Image (cartoon, rainbow, N blue to C red):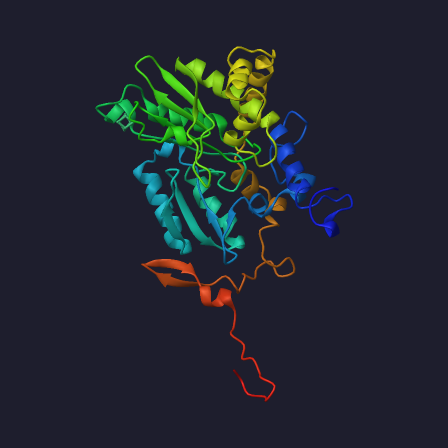
Length: 350
Ligand code: SF4
């Protein structure tokens, strides 16, 4: 009750504590007996707008949709599906920095229809809306690049599929580069991997954004299995010890002992926690379910995807678009609202 606006206090949770509890429960599920589905039961009321609709709210009240494209690898057939969905629903498309495709301009009532098309084609939620794993970027690596020393694409796909849906105190980003030239920019990620002739180097605590930070080397020349085990431990230790909305970079700098302490815990098992951290990650991997598929297959869950509860078939009339560069953009004049004439004391408009 010591956080947030005074009028929001009093037991139901303020705007600080409520999403924090939602995040903690989502991160600890299924360990605490909660469903892994963030909109189940009382968990639903704890989610903020993006998690509440499993999509990203944009400035005119429309939503954007990001299907998962593991490692940034996609077949021509799946690319065509994304194009067809965007065309059929009139969505704006843009390539993201995380090697995926963002579809903008969906009304809330269109979300399940769009997800159905995408899920039927083999896509799933990319969790762009959640405090969770976003993407694992990759360069083309040894398979195509003359300089590559490891298969960075396969490693990125394996890692993205392992940690997809992992809820955490803040978003998690990753990347895998196939050699020291670092084309995937792995050191700008929460956990970044760079191939060596002997295996993989693991870097942690990087990010871009307002306070850019290069990730620090945690361990080097790891085998595939050693790399995955270490990331399992690192992520679970971070999730269980970081403060709300604390990225790995800030957490590494705040935690007593910093990088050396984290290395002692997750590499040398100084606290005897590693078995438990690995078991928790194994539980997460075994319990993963796609939130979009879970939603479109349940009529009760679909009921929330309406603009007006008393007129569920009515679309939001304020979500309008105008054309720009052969696509759509929000109607900014509509957003600004009408310009009202102001009367002076003499009764003349100014
Ligand atoms: S990081 Fe190395 S392997 Fe990957 S694209 Fe760049 S030069 Fe090639």
